[in-house]
Amino acid sequence: MPHFDLSALARHGLVTTVLCCLIALVLALGGQGAWDVQLAYALSIGLTSWLVIDLGRLWLSRHAAIPWPAGWRGGALVLAGIATGMAVGTALGNAYSGRPLGGLDLWQRHGGAGALLITVAASVGMSVFFYQRGKSQHLQAQIVQVQRDAAEARLKLLEAQLEPHMVFNTLANLRALIATDPVRAQDMLDHLIDYLRATLSASRVPLHPLAEEFERLRDYLELMAVRMGARLAYALELPDDLRAVPVPPLLLQPLVENAIRHGLEPQVQGGRITVRASVISGAPPRLRLQVQDSGAGLGPLPALPEAPGRHFGLAQVRERLATLHGADATLELIAESVGGTNATITFPLKT
Image 1 (tube, rainbow, N blue to C red):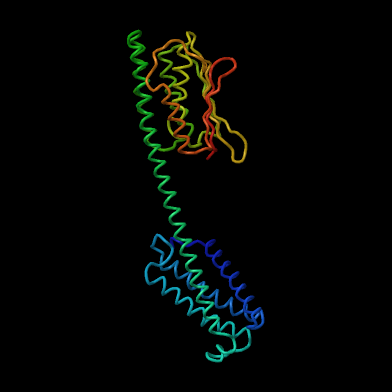
Image 2 (spheres, helix red, strand yellow):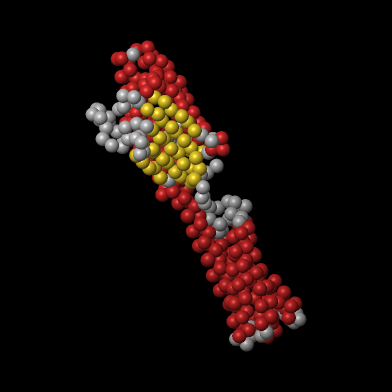
């Protein structure tokens, strides 16, 4: 049964039991009989009606979106539950009280009309409650699914925007190299083809292992090393126990690009980039991804032509993090005291 939920069934039974106890208490205080006898009748009638209605609605709605039978079947189920509860529950109550009495005598001695009225009111009330609860849960599930679909669509859009941005920056570097060193430009073009082949296939999935993200960074840094030569040094630090952690493709790529373009390239001597993954202890633990460079830092840069979309990559990273993790994710740019910049991403660790 698609809607069978043992915990929900147990909660419904508990609510019904409490309601039956309250009804028995009210009847006993009203002089309708001994507390234990009233409790026997109330529990027998109430729990029998509940079982018929709750199990019946699960069966009849097994192929429906909302766990309640549609149309006339819902009303017929409630009537069946009431009738079964009165017949079976009364018999059980009679057996407990030692008065196996029949129809009219029972109504006269034990307030059968009142019991029927209470059973009808309680059964209808509980049925309406269960129906509204099931409908609310169904609508909530639909809202969550729509939000998830919207988030996935937005991530796809952001990735689709990010890929050509990365290619544009790389081609701009290649164009600059062609004029000064055609042999190295040819080398760079070969690396670019290999890099794009691996990157574009990997970026077609919403998440991939952190190890693959680091491999793509290694490919990209090797590509940039063709152009910058000895001016670029790098280190990738990924602990073995974090290699399988899922992350969005090209998450760190814009940060590395930013470090090279605005940190290392403006310096004659170049610099070093370190990409590091680690865990921040806590409940829950958080994944920390750092891109640290020894470049020009966050201060004013030397006069360089302002590239279109200078802050595009950072904006995309922030938007992707917000879409995936909301306020639980952060991106911080911190100026290092000895020069350079430390870009740090943190979000809840999921394995």
